[in-house]
Amino acid sequence: MTSLSTPDTIALPQERRLVTEIPGPRSLAMQARKTAAVSAGVGVMLPVYVERAGGGVVIDADGNSLIDMGSGIAVTTVGNANPEVAAAVQAQVANFTHTCFMVTPYAGYVEVCEALNRLTPGDHEKRSALLNSGAEAVENAVKIARAYTKRQAVVVLEHGYHGRTNLTMGMTAKNMPYKHSFGPFAPEIYRVPASYPFRDRGLKGPEMAEIATTRIDREIGGGNVAAIIIEPIQGEGGFIVPDPGYFAAMADYARAHGIVFIADEIQSGFCRTGSWFASEYEGVVPDLITTAKGIADGMPLAGVTGRAEIMDAVHPGGLGGTYGGNPVACAAALAAIDWMERNDAPALAQSIEATMIPFLRDLAVQFPAIGDVRGRGAMIAIELVKPGTLDPDAELAAALNRHCHQNGVITLTTGTHGNVFRFLPPLTMPAPLLEEALGILRQGFEAHAS
Image (cartoon, rainbow, N blue to C red; front, side):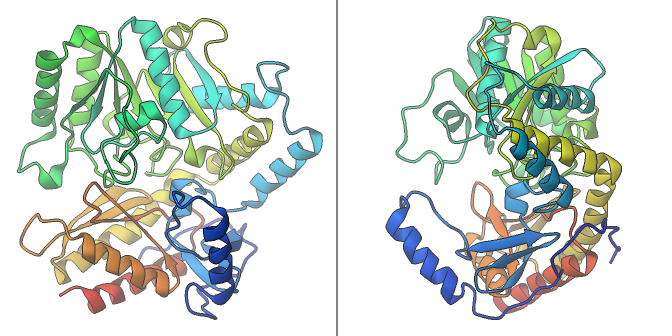
């Protein structure tokens, strides 16, 4: 396997170490307290209660050291508790924790916006606004697009995911667990076909885009659409990488009809896919781009960045929020971005891809339940099916997930059908740990796949 070149900033021993069953007795005791104190609506996938984390490991209350293949769902891209990020946060906390940027502003907010304007695709004049979460970024992007176009309709894709607030639930495709029993949802949201190469029966990206845009023309009217919002790689939908040409064709259609084209890069942005932003793979320059997750290495921060004339269409006071662009989160973001630039984070993601994709493709030859291997950088997935069919095998995905968890590897499932295994290792993952995690996955297939 390819060796990763990981910067030596890791304090914790980088090893998988199991001293109890997973979860252990202390975690189980804490889980009982959670059940008594926390709403049942707040689920827990793997009830190991974390005390420390860093590099490629998470250490729980029982002293178990687990390999982290999830990064808190693509958040701790530069490593959990990255020393440089932690130092920046500590320094900012010592100065002040909050003033509300809309009341008495501070330099950190401006500096993060400057960085976003510089790093996002395109050399046009840009503006940014900072918020708290990915869902809030998406909502504000829609607000901005509606203010600019004076239109209302919003077009989203099948299998798309954009958040859990009322508007973003309406934009999200998957019912359970995100939408079930929570309606009614916001109006003027329309869903069109995505490009899903594994399930498109040979249709190419431009052909799928034509199907989607024809639907827009006939069912909505291009002149009524304020925004088309697309994940360049669909996250919760199953790490679906569109066939070449789809993303660009949808952007071209938006441009031709005066529609604001929004790239939701909340999960795929900030070096996760081997480039700073996944939009770059097709050379697409979005009008607006939403960011969160990896931007601040675990501190709550999100942004909307885009063309100056669009971003400035909103009246003064129309964007903002009490905590948006919190100074501590901004300090974390500036340190994380600096680390990414100095350590060539895109190359680190590419190294992870160079290790994982060949391994998973070899595994697929041995186990036909792996119907598809896909992804970019450190955003990789396998789709599990009943061998010889396209029928989703969510049961196998769940069994493999349990196997990995019981053997000290944190893994995640996803997908509209619950049959996609996704991998989001931090870019600080040491090569031996990554290889060990993949070996445990292989053991899971040997134990559970026919």
